Length: 318
Image (cartoon, rainbow, N blue to C red):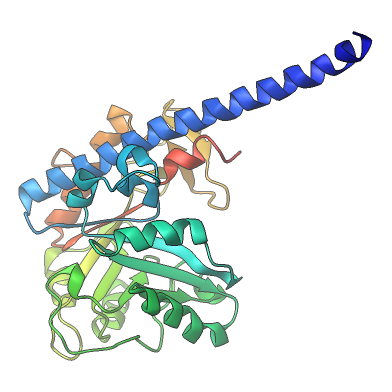
């Protein structure tokens, strides 16, 4: 009996920790289901205006499965709402670090949707291997080095460069991921640099500094330097709020409004949000002043939805 009393507090603590872990898992899964709905709603809204609008969520591959559980069958409603899936760091995060958990999910999704992988390597010498590993899987790939960590540069080479007309995401053999224009002195310099390339897909921000690109500017980018057609996709962050965006109000900060829930480690200008909140969703879609409508009005072919994995970071990352 004495020994039992001595160990009881430890057992109680263990039960509390297990209970807390189960609670986090349950809340994360519930949030994942809400993210599934969010992506579907964005897609339906956008395609109600432009039936050909392309939707590409980044990360969160669990969402492609029923109940957001990878052991379940694929979620056909979610897959019907998207055209592809973007992923970061599948084989490389600085060095060779394959993520077998996500890789297994992507192999199941690939027969139905295009997979776009962005790898990060610590040496340019690793770029060929990173590309080869992804293309062997059937993924298209963009590789960046430390001087391009924040997607600021255009690479010198294009994998599988071609003169094909790219009318759907399924046609694409490569893409350019450049969402930060800080290296360019002017709006026109930035546009001209992109215009001079032969990438099949351009993934870029809606804005140069604080001004949205126009439909005329975006339309000019839809032709490669070699004359073939390509796609231009706008980046949109749907899982975290960015304090430099047009929607951010002067008095906003962490917990004000209360759906701004958590700091985004590594990004001082971003905060994880309760993305199911009605006020946040109105910012993103459903009305003429929404982010999605601004992307459509600017003539983009689609939207690249970042931070869909917010359901994980809200509950598991401290």
